Image 1 (cartoon, one colour):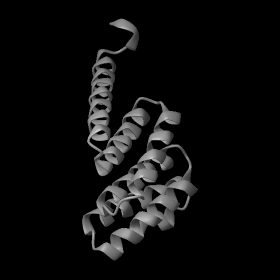
Image 2 (cartoon, helix red, strand yellow; image 1 turned 90 degrees about the vertical axis):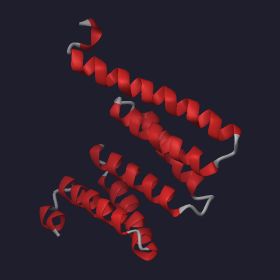
Image 3 (spheres, one colour; image 1 turned 135 degrees about the vertical axis):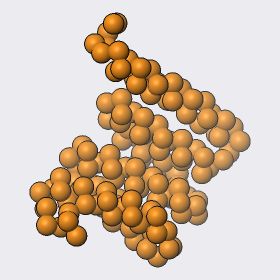
Image 4 (spheres, helix red, strand yellow; image 1 turned 45 degrees about the horizontal axis):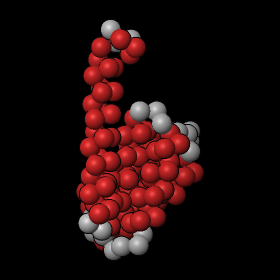
Length: 141
């Protein structure tokens, strides 16, 4: 069955690699057309894909780029998605302080902007952050 060990792992990894290639192509197009919000979104997606592929240094860099770029524009939903994605990734990496900071910032923006659906996702991610930090009582709130 090749080098992956299990056939399903090969299929999933192949799909992730394909998604990464498509996102890189979209990033190039977005850069050529100077679509700043799309550039940020592409970097966030590349962060997610690299995290799923176990390439955590690359994921960290892409999340940082996404946030740096999105902070130069006023598209709040793109910022919320970038903070939420990096926060979720950080908690999986055991970086609960980073996760809490990103998710807390996102929650503040969601609350003040009335982004209720994002607020729900952020609160769930915060619960996982509290649980990972060993604060089960806070996670249940």
